[in-house]
Image (cartoon, rainbow, N blue to C red; front, side, top):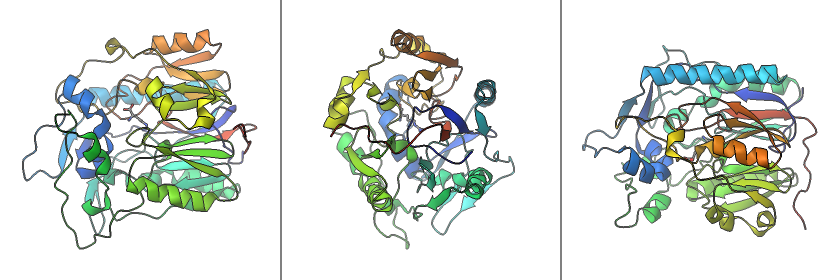
Length: 381
Ligand SMILES: NC(=[NH2+])NCCC[C@H](N)C(=O)O
């Protein structure tokens, strides 16, 4: 079918599902610590994550226990089977080959991670795939693994665009969000000591697809720093005449798909009333479902050397299969019951280690064909 996806609720007919093959480690360096910093308070309280660094380790490999990688693969492949049983066509990226070494650019080298959270480095606006400028260095070439899928949609007539690529020197990153959040005495660690580079060119455009909420003709984009603001400007200019692009201000550090999701026109799934109050008036008019507070026993216990990369709200990261059917993590019964009480059909999916790999069911997927999805105006005038 032709690429066609303007919203997150129309009946899902085709989807890209990420791959967990060979996810062996995380690589902590400035861009990684910036990207995952919102969860530091949880990590420091529940899982001491950021060990105090020595002066020399500006880059630190953090191995992932093989059992967790294998269980992640089991969960992802089971999700693929569920899509197939539901007659939803599943496209998969090229799996990361174990022999793939580090990548090197004129500015940095980094370890490649698998194309698991495919929601992040691409956005689908109607009949256009846009590859976004990554926030994390190890993800710089992640959309390369999606080339066969995107090329096939292009052959079928889709538009295919790549946003300007950043150099990603340390000076490229706007640290203001972390600095503002790390008030004296807070648990959030400062991300400091950016190193000078001959390629410094000031703040650069960096933004992820998971910062966007697509509502037909209207797109809401979370902007938390100068990098995102440049990405917002590019999207606004590029989409002018086709979409109305609205700015959300610091709803989260970057991704908002465990803060707010649209389940159908007029109905949002929202993390908390605090998040709801930050939404623009047009969205505050919509009905909202607030899930129960996550329970610690919804999550496996991890060791202190396991990097916990998400908040406890990660299971809000659901995937709508239609305006009344939602894929939810089977380990979150409270959310399942809440949605069922609101008349939704829930498809439970096992995803055990969502906190270790930085994403849930919505993160793992990119909805490429939604039947009847169109650039409708869902916002009251
Ligand atoms: N598309 C994604 N990878 N989104 C994941 C967002 C997770 C969010 N930072 C949290 O910890 O709850």
